[in-house]
Image (cartoon, rainbow, N blue to C red; front, side, top):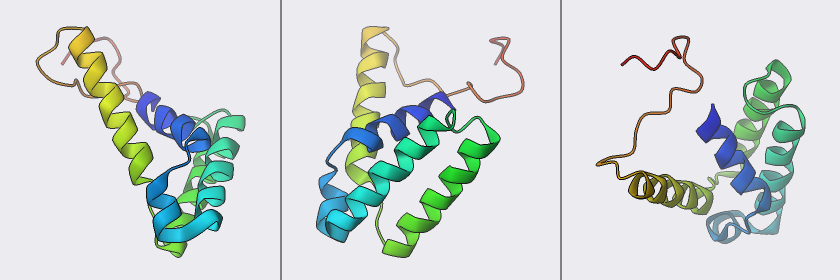
Length: 104
């Protein structure tokens, strides 16, 4: 969930050129306001946040767009985090898993 919420944070702030190119200002506004609504509801880990995320997904699919620039920025962030931690690869996100004791 942490990475999904990070993506939503990026989406709520970034002037994502993928959204602008494919769907114009309306698509960008829908993504920004939808992502911000999920965040205001406590993020994707809450029931209402998950419902709002589902609505945002349906809205963007209906517009035929995806937040590619936001996704790219998240991927770059995860890569730089792995480099900083001296990891050979980006580790799986286990923030929403049932077993959070650190065991693989």
